[in-house]
Image 1 (cartoon, rainbow, N blue to C red):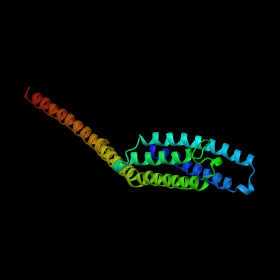
Image 2: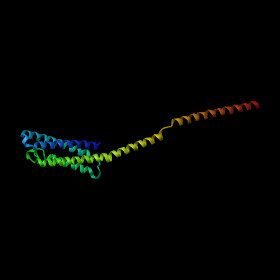
Image 3: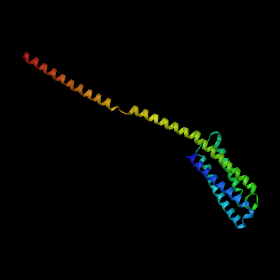
Image 4: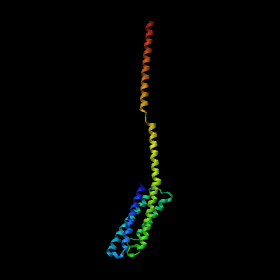
Length: 194
């Protein structure tokens, strides 16, 4: 579940970074945009960066429930944090905000961040596909086999038990009949002797 949650956060981060890069590209076209439009784009960038910050925190928190191999948790967390740092550079007051005119540097940072998010999603996805899902399938097979074994041990074979009960009842009746016959023969012998 934590891997799925981390993947969901990663997908949202990918989308947000793509939107952020689009805003920077649109704002780089200075000939076609007014100052008001650039200011509106900067406001949208600031809101997107705030969302990226929240999703980055949530994504790194969801990693706590996983144990990625080879210290992968720290590596993925570092990728998320470096991606956030690239996003933070384009918010108002950042080194690459729209008013700075550093569009190439902003785009380079955002492209690197998009790559980092893609790599982190790939790491979590590979962990899901290659570690968690085979383990879940193996555990399900083990549960099936244990349940079947338990069923064989605990369950009664009603046909066998019913036939054994009928046999026991017949033997009891036969025993009782033999005793009656033996008692009658003894009584007959006693009558003849008297």
